[in-house]
Length: 99
Length: 512
Image (cartoon, rainbow over all chains, first blue to last red; front, side):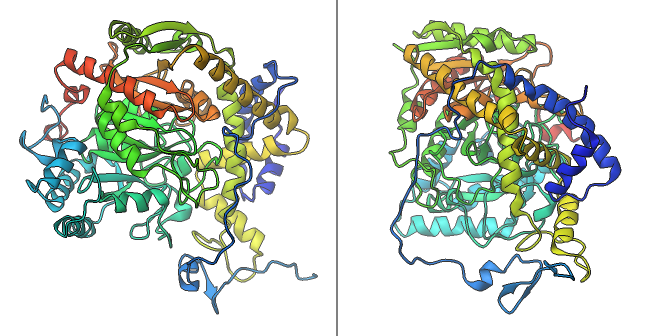
């Protein structure tokens, strides 16, 4: 039995904002199935009452004084923009026509 | 020195260690500009075949070097590595050089700010020779996942230099630079160091700043040094480490005394633990195990007490890592949205932002990055979260507990750095699980945030390629890995009559 279906892989690609071609989806489906089957071994570990670690260090919130410090100029911030206009990032349409 | 590295003459500056070069510059016997020139000449002579560098601007390098000379002439003392050239992994932002992380999605990008590591290299008077090749977004163990071509192992140009920091390891092993930077998320410094016969350290997580390091898996990413010997690695470690207010996970503690430890270079009175699960060598190359076992005997002969330690959960570290790292990657790489910087594809005035985003990401990311984004999205999706990501996080706790129990009994743990020597280019390129196994022994230290180093311990009998010894110590025990690493290095170089790299083939003559 496969760990993941091709339809699930296509759904994951949409969630991941990756416009993948059919042949890429076919190839990835087989590979993801193999990888997921292998990493599923984590379920064998005796970890029932073990607290999860999201991080290696016991750090909690780190605060600093709320003070004004030098930061990027608008020109610097926009220097890598694919498109800019009037000191703003110019982006494609984000709302549907009917919205 | 054996002189087996293709130098024009034994006095050539490109054959020297970083400590020697700094001393020559500080004492006025040479200049930072002359040192930079010698290394640029070496890059010009060999990088056509090694392909360690993605970007080198000779005039800009020489200008940097002259500024260092001016600082020294003005009476400033920038530090113990002033005037030394360094190869810089292309994952660190640099305002004066492109930064791509090996990805097409960032082709030609000029960051508006320097990473903290970059800024500290500049302050310390190091001369950045250029940016080095890497697996795209640091995802890989061979540097084959770069959008800009493969890097070749100086020991055998048909083999991989390790990864993800393979451009950096190759540059140092090919004598193009005495030092290089890397980042280690699951082994991306130690594994390339091992397979190219050099030294590489993963510092304690949080010991070196992630600010301006293009993020892969934020709870694991750790910048660290490459060098041809342990002392040079320690000098670089000290130069760029320490607390940074720009990184919320940076540790606000003094940097462990790694340079002093590298100079001490003894193991008297120390207890060394051999990780039973990794010494058993399931799936490992015999030549790797032989050199590892000899290194353990050597440690004993140098006065260390050697014991076997069981870390039963280490065998789950690899699958846990390949859930945790892709999960964090799928979140981190969401920033490549074609809106603020980097590539934008298909913005023809009719497509929506979401369509442009999906087209751009499909074209801009390579196969491994797509695999990991998809895997992470899967592991974090509702219905699978508890069975995959949640379980992996519990294993992370168990791995840390195994380490803690071991360090109650021993000062350091040792294992081979990698199960095999450098594999041929192409061998594992389309077999992700085979590629992932290269990180089998290095991953536990990342999950637990440990300090860990790889030092050369000989050549495997089957193929004559370098083998690395991994030395692991607790969080903020970085000095211990340098102390033990330097002791092993000293004893082995006495035995070999020089550094292991002296046995590497002549790159310049090989061209003729």
